[in-house]
Image (cartoon, rainbow over all chains, first blue to last red; front, side):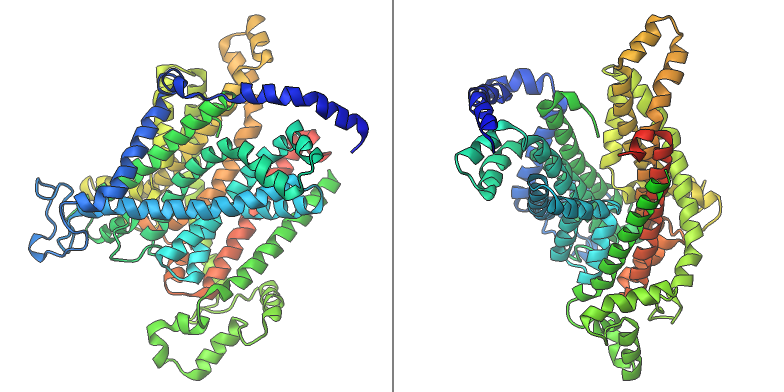
Length: 306
Length: 308
């Protein structure tokens, strides 16, 4: 690093402080003026997610029936006050099973987003920070992964690992690594040219310290957006795989699985299909709406860009 | 252009080789012995000779480092092994199902384009108005809807209650529902992308100039707005096509459509590892071919890309 560059950076240091203050876009007192009125989709999305989280926590304990309890005298009951979502071929209460499924879905969604985000973040971070060979190799690898639908990658992994909840989480998580890696990479490429990184380097921060102490805190907002939208995608893919019999195994009350086991009784008891499907849609929709709104809030220029 | 072409084909082949390598290694993910896992409960009925035969077919009698060369050599000879149950050669079996899958994918794509692109453009033109909010709410619902759920609901409504379309089969009548289902889901994504592309274009200076010089709104939209948006639209349609080929796994299963996806799911459930590997390879080849063709179209449309 030559002298002139150092001078420039020292000159810039005053600027950085100012920039940081200006870029603290979000203040708590703005929550009404900026979020709820200007961005109703985010308000609705956050309320829906909040309710879903509550259900995931207390759902199983407020469920009217045990989700596994068999009751052969009450098979195929259509929705009524006793069983508001009806009962299945073994007399199990669908409402209780769907409620219980909220927790299962959150578990799968959070764990697989965790896997995808952790590895994707590392790959994107190293690729974006390093110049040259490593960057090329990593991003070429991500490009290759991108040529396949996530569902297919997850399916191939589950097929060989064997179907179970744990393997479903691993497969859906691995299949989403490319997504987080690419977003992280894109953001890091922009951030790494900002003066605060040069400043960190001057005061002696090594590559790892620059990446983990300085870069990561600055790329958190876009990562929250992609993780929210990624959660929606993970739930959808996991439900699809469970529906095909490649994910969660019976008798766990997972929404895709409840739906698929109702397929044989599609005429006799359509409620076995309707309610778990609605549950999947509401959950995915909440996260999509919230993610869209959050993106608009953090980056007004990118409004509704897909 | 020729250099670009050669470079692009070279990277495509490299991608395929890496995909083939990954596919050949998948067998090592199987916990325990793959052949035992394949046999499952029926293992006691199978002769040890047959077990050895399957083992050598999968290349499991060779050391790990020879697995990939062995696999690749067989694939290049057009030999992807035989199915365990039925002892059919894998490649002809897969190819016989391919036409049905392609028919469904093209039909679904047609539905997706016809619905998604116009609605996305209309939403962009009406940006911020009531119609835009309704359309985008619909599109968000579409991307949040599980495709199998929509399929089953349509099946109940149109095939079972109204009796308009057959429940399963492979004629034209039975093509309508699966094509519509996958088309609607894909249309939601296409509409969102088409809208954001068009919103950007409508803010360009040259649109304002075109209006200012007194061109009719129809000409402004058709000639100045729609035309430049096509490059992006073609790209996302190609992307949706590969999604659709993969999404068929679920759609074909819901509608009992006799294609690759249906075969793949039964292979997955029966642990027909040869067949799954073959399916992924065929799928990869299609995806890579589509992306090469697309890149060449881009390069033809936009000279800047070839000199990148």
